[in-house]
Length: 69
Image (tube, rainbow, N blue to C red):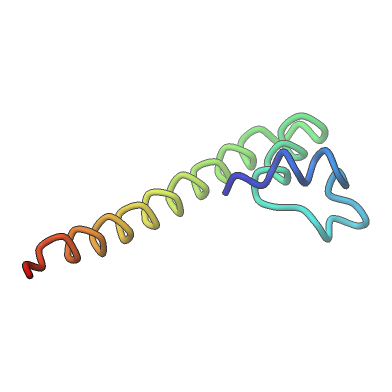
């Protein structure tokens, strides 16, 4: 989720968008092309994926903490 800065600095998403991640694609859609609604929907998807992954990881680690030796 946090690879956008590396992709933008190293390749800019080129050649032909092969190295793009969701965040760099969102930035391109919003600021280069001007499709703000589409970029907003990508941002919401990133938020949703992050929330789901965080919830699953938190649930798995809370189950491990309940074990007593």
